[in-house]
Image 1 (cartoon, each protein chain N blue to C red):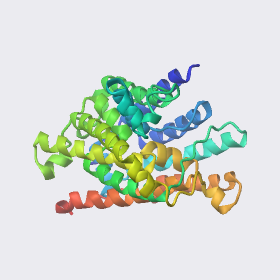
Image 2 (image 1 turned 90 degrees about the vertical axis):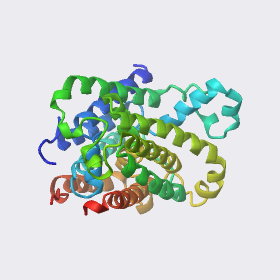
Image 3 (image 1 turned 90 degrees about the horizontal axis):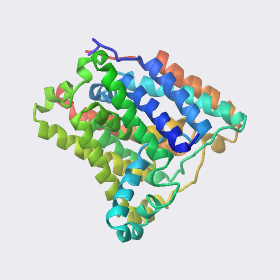
Length: 176
Length: 178
């Protein structure tokens, strides 16, 4: 099958999961960030737990098309801080605002438009940021197993179990 | 706040998302969204002012070559819109009331009922989201879910700084409520 069609179908299921799982909901996102309603973080930990196991089982058979992002730590840390503020202010992330817009939420439409502007501003600032923030402290496409120097599965299995334990046993909702 | 859960539980959604990520990694590559905002910009700028697009070192990477432009990643985001559209039309009655609409009750309780204020915040938030995501090289899907699942160092660093910053910002916004 054509990769464009595969992309569209995978995206369709992705969007449906985010909508049905309440991930495009403002109160869920802010509830998680205020450390009261752990729904979103439990959803993410479950996805990461299952995904880690799935991906490294595929990798054992040489079937995983991995895509490890480079660790240019200055850009990743600074970008994470800016992203976090935008996440708390809008109540969406780049994926959930697309789903929220599809639901007909106007605030999500404004987040999508803001996102297009933000990405454009980044493109304009790229030459300066590349030299100042991205190139220094760039350690390349490093994984934790590279750092520790063990076979990936021995790390993937305990990490996966840790994520699932966080979701099912550790994280608890707090209400006043 | 607890009155309704969601159409599917976080357990079902998390399991489905983990399996979908595995399938995507098997078929093509892991999930990611934020790059496609640049691709969309690049397609628009290439259409309107091709010379300006080519002269920008970042935009020139996207929107012109075969594999970029409307590729797997862009179709994935288009699919997300379609998936959200179809399921929200079919299942609207099952969605908790508190999750509906453009004015979240939680927001209006603290910041008032002004639509302009909410939409301005959503817009500014969007600017910061995508500027930050492009600086970091990914977002919640590409960095946190796909990246951590591949045990990438950069994604753990991103997760740490993002959650730290977002938790602090949310507490600052809602400090009146304690």
